[in-house]
Length: 208
Image (cartoon, rainbow, N blue to C red; front, top):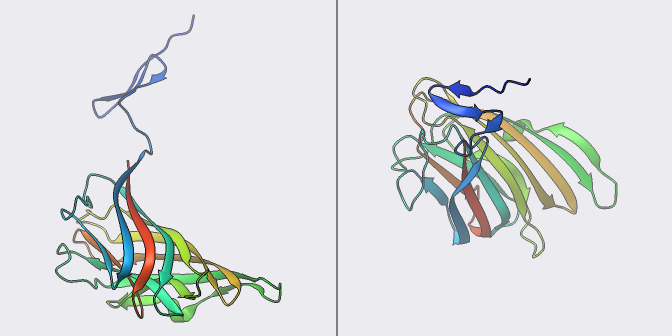
């Protein structure tokens, strides 16, 4: 005889007679907002504005930036954080940056730590990609995870991974860091370090 028991966590039934409760979403991604660029100087996701949610509703937020094409060649995509719903940006942030590269003609294949793209308590733009060419066929895409931005106890960790085309080279970039504040982060802004975001899409998801 097999006895099937329920699993209850904090008053919520997770498993009932061996089956996952239909009301429980584990790791579910919810699309919150999509913004499409058209020669924009910045793209901002501000909690409470234009249906954006960036609070304790989700413990993890995921930004996907897709087909980012800069208006200026050799421009880098970066982020800035806010703790006052976008009234000001530039919370001190520390990060580290490295690349994996492979050129079309196979003359370059390397992994390197990019010291110049690091941030150390920076209140300026924190780079999450290196240079993206603005040739007609060039762009960059990737994703950024932001963990527990509503915490008023801990700093706010983030991870990004992106791929871009530059100088006939595929460049896979990895960035990790933390927004060094115990205040809730309630807005994230994306911008290039020079010129506009000519085109591209950024999507914000919440993950339970």
